Image 1: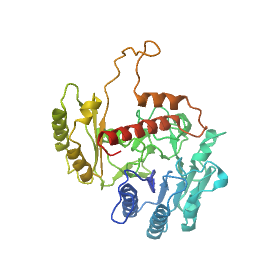
Image 2 (image 1 turned 45 degrees about the vertical axis):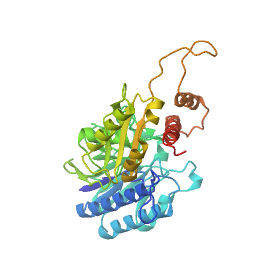
Image 3 (image 1 turned 135 degrees about the vertical axis):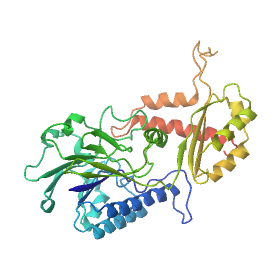
Image 4 (image 1 turned 60 degrees about the horizontal axis):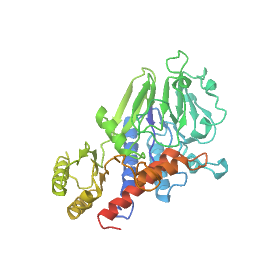
Length: 396
């Protein structure tokens, strides 16, 4: 009994304000292309069942293009593997705040896909002697009955599928926002009566949590912190893809998807004591070290200790040439840390940079319960960084 386990497709994801030849956001097209390649690869693997563990879409109200991509891809899967059931749960990104709002995922039911988007359901596949306990994101809140997440004694094979954040597992800065926390102990890891396999979504990096308990990872870089995600994968020698699990043997195989968009995050550069010409040369040197052409790539270089005057003195015409070649070149120029000097008004103290003041304000501002404060603070800092960069380069 072999099952294909996918998650975190994020159709409709957009980023970087670049369009392809048809007028579609280039990153949205990249994500759609990754989904099409994943469908091709699943069909080639010919599993007995296919599980999609949440976040098929990037938002509750995806674009028409994203809906069509999902519908066409899943229809192609159902036609190529008519005997293989396909089960889909809602993740945090494609779960409405209100049940009354309804979920676009229900549209996929017309294809014969088993969609679970509101409450926990046990899906029975007698022909495979398989039972799938499907727990959507909405069911992870309120009075969660994880004590009922147990095997179905009527089926030989039992699988649990959900979209949680397991505390203490995600590396710092790599977690996505809006996750529902579930303790590992609730998944029955190591229990003799546990599931044959637990298919997890939400963490965008493939990861074996415990024997037979896996995050499949995402199909593309779609998290709020793609740089932390890339660094963790680069450190572990991983790439994007999905999993195929053999429920008889417990063997889990990684099916890699060749990336169509190259991503790179350089080691940070320290500009302390440099002149503008020296920093220009250092930046050029780093960019020359890219292991692939910069054309169409997504690249970040963080430079620390860059005073405003030094940033203004850089060769911004040359930098614009690099930016035009790349899909996205993020030159992250970071100001020196405040030295704690006294200020003249209001008594002694530390003059805080504007991003820090904004972060402090946002960290104290009252928010609706369903808004993620860390994400809000990160967005505030990011917008200020973009404005400062534009001012330095004369774009604003």
